[in-house]
Amino acid sequence: MAYDSGKTREKLLDAASAEFTEHGLSGARVDRIAVAAGVNKQAIYAYFGSKEALFDAVLDLSLAHLTATIPITSYDLPGYAVALFDYLCAHPEYERLTMWKRLERADATPEEVEHYRRKLAQIAPAAGHAPIDVLLLILGMAHAWGNSAPALRALDGDAVSVSDQQARYRAALQKAARAAVEALR
Image (tube, rainbow, N blue to C red; front, side, top):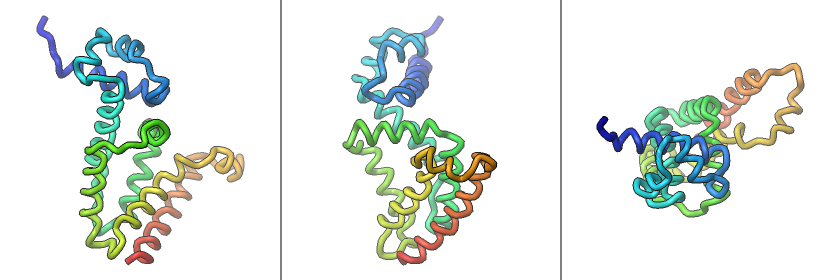
């Protein structure tokens, strides 16, 4: 049977994504990642060099998937905010990974910096004089639901389902994003 290094790398990234989502960088264990991937622990170091580099690779892969799924355009920033919100609701693991990143790794990878540099360049025509402020507001509003306290959402009442709450927030997000873009032009 031929050895497939691409498949091994993919298995490691899948197993690491689940481990980091659940435990963060500090709580993740390379032994559990290796067992889940069905490979020797040394493969992690051979492919990625360190647990930290594996964490960065998982984040970069997650960010690339999000970017490919939801491209940002200057002509519809409120639509981008809503699409991002929908993605985050459908992929709560992405929200968890980014929370762990903010908690445990204050540094930005070159890939992350370049990702946001490209986003700023793409929205600059519609964002006026403050594209970074517009992007911060759009991203903050789109992430607000996932970052909010469950106790706050519970105040919405027991009769209202989570999907109803999300639909209402989605509509409010679109209006707020439109207002933010207009206010900062």
